[in-house]
Length: 231
Image (cartoon, rainbow, N blue to C red; front, top):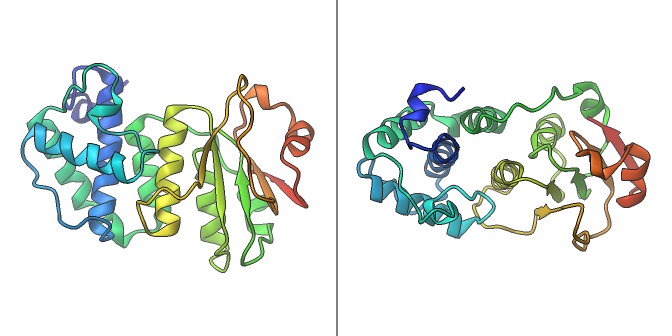
């Protein structure tokens, strides 16, 4: 069930959730200095334009009315402004990236399975390692991996097979790189389309994979790498 303070943002519960996620991402982007100026907190059209601008900078976020597919309906002005004020009040730029991620996931209404923290703690990604996370974990395991191994400054590639998975993965990619610029870190995967070309992978993180990816052995064959962990 959609919480009332999110449901008031839009008559369509799905769009309300998506706008709420976008407003959390907007608060994170403002707080971390990724935008030129803070967005005025009033006016549905102002918020809609701000969310579309967010998508223009990082299309994986898919949070603005232009992504709605229903004529681009805007968020309710008052409810949207109130939610943005709440998100700003959390001062997410002062918190660990995982905090921002979990609030964004709650806004979307995404319930991910628990992460096996031991496997992530015991992983040994080299400082320049390329890590691939299977869909549709939305980057959650990768965020933990970064938290446990701050010396890992290599590349993360996040698989996504749903819109929500892509949105969350886009946010994780932004939090890792400190920029809204889409850099190829998020790749869409589906059972009926070829896999996108990937660079050589050093570590595969198997977390919340869809059934069509197969069991862990099948995933390792599909994405060959020297090491893999179940997260």
